[in-house]
Length: 290
Image (cartoon, rainbow, N blue to C red):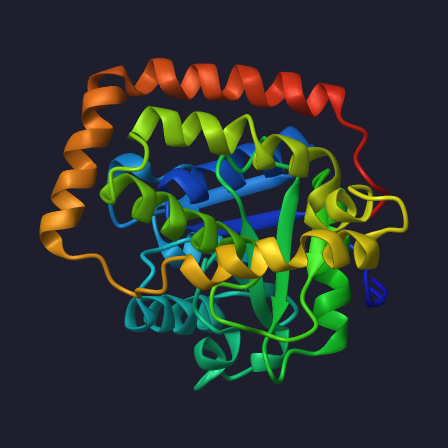
């Protein structure tokens, strides 16, 4: 059997998934929906799916998806075990949402095959997946990751360099911090804030993103727009929240305010409605070529 070149994938491929929570289970659904094989191992036996041990999950795998708790020491332990049990040719990927891949690579025997492949939740619905190489990730691993994401029907967003939180969660964190600040300051309640975001800029950005939005906002493009409204944005930027931590008391206020609007008892209904509307929006969008 010949060696695969950069960007080539076996058909069908086998994925070993470590962690059977929302992200791990989402990976399994996505992989299987595209005709590939997936085995899921979790320390909680009820979340295992096709594997009774980590070694069994990654045996013969073309790619290993780590989807365990977002704690460096936990991930390092799991990655070490996966690396020892997986084939030497297997791509090893973390679903981390914030940790630097260069830090997770430290101590690995073959760090060149490791990188972050960060899906969004729900994994099987949202079309973007981030590909984040570490400092010593091999170019061939990045090419394989891009091909893998494309083979799973998703659009890879490949970072040129790593930053904490990558791209998607940095954008989300900026909006989320200001949303929290506006609620805590009494400017708007939870429901009104969600409505303003989801039916305001987030809806527009679903179609064209912030740069194209402001490019089209004035004849002459972004430069002309900023010449006209730049001072207004500067005033807004100067007043935005800049804190980096929410107190326990404020977290309790936020949790209570959110529970009052979106009861945990109605979780299944909220998830079903989210998925219904996401499918409708995605069905109306023309996604860019990868």
